[in-house]
Length: 319
Ligand code: ADP
Image 1 (tube, helix red, strand yellow):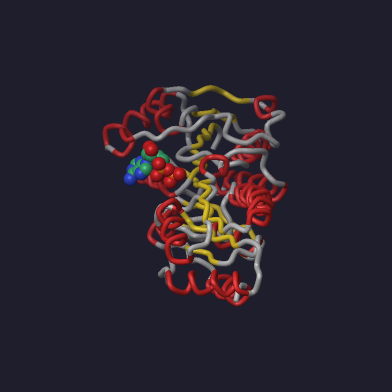
Image 2: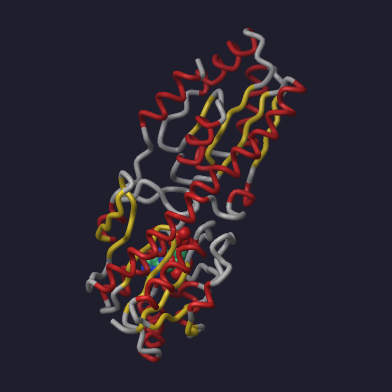
């Protein structure tokens, strides 16, 4: 394989740039030519493709977002859209493609693979909601952003003796809520994977208040429901002053943590190894600190599992 492409697709995540850098540098190290496909699959259809060199990825390892930009592209879900993309790949004689993104992006990568264009997926999403890898690129940075925000909110919560409901990202996966809740000693953590026992949350708040606790923090993943509605229900049931903060897109941005930079570099480089070995339709991941690769179809058919032991621990530590 002599010419390959790289694109980022779906929601952006801090560390994507470090992954792009690793892909480009490792490919060039192995004597390949690398082409950037801008704006995800939309750019593939439009032919927004340009050659990269070692310098194209200089000074980006520390930057959030993605220099290749990202887009959602419904047209690519159709046969016609995919064929248009393939036309562009043929035009540039690109023989393999690295797709950095979430599971939606991997579906696009799988379609291309089925049509004869080998693709390798690199998991980049802050949600950590992909099966077959312990961590996705961007999760650690988002987690640390949440912790920083909660620490600040906690100061106000203590000063005013308030209950705070903090809504964090995670439509289908509660990892950001669980990890940030454990890291910040939250009273209750509400995740989409586990049934929410409202009465238990209320009892815990009341116990804490009676014990003289100055503040309480409840973390709620967005997939569970609206933080605002939840906050109203809490205030009604406990009669304690309750405020709600929806952290929103602040969780997506920022300079990637060291962990995310290292993970992205390792996964990006591993993706090139797979293409060089003639592999296709696989996702690179990390399990028990070892690089692994899995069939994308398996990854898409499985669900990422919430760590039940950690979930149980969070309950035991906030009695
Ligand atoms: P993420 O990759 O973060 O999960 P999305 O689910 O929005 O983000 O998917 C990103 C893009 O991947 C979509 O806009 C679309 O271009 C492509 N995609 C998603 N699902 C499919 C599919 N079934 N077939 C082909 N392409 C898809």
